[in-house]
Image (cartoon, rainbow, N blue to C red; front, top):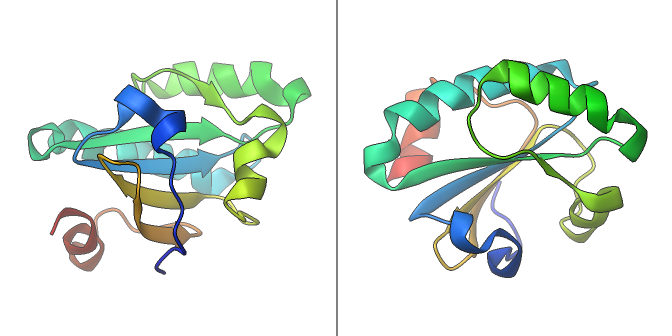
Length: 130
């Protein structure tokens, strides 16, 4: 699904690469946790393509300790980012998790996926990398 004209350049700053995939996830979302594992592998396999992944946790403040625990155990290897009281969920009109955005280096959205994505599907990979 193509996004409207979302931009996160000022929020993501130096985390942006040629193509940065942002996943919004939560501890209660089993599909999110499964996708974190697949995205970790995709990130490691695609570093040479100017590709990076940023994961933003959408849990409520009282769930952040559990979220940080899951994040640490995932071995994802990037910093833990929490969406401050749903600021970005609201701004980007996110009502389902996981939700993904693919941004370019300027912070402009190229793609949006709502719901779980098969990160091994060749069609999906062509959308992301071509």
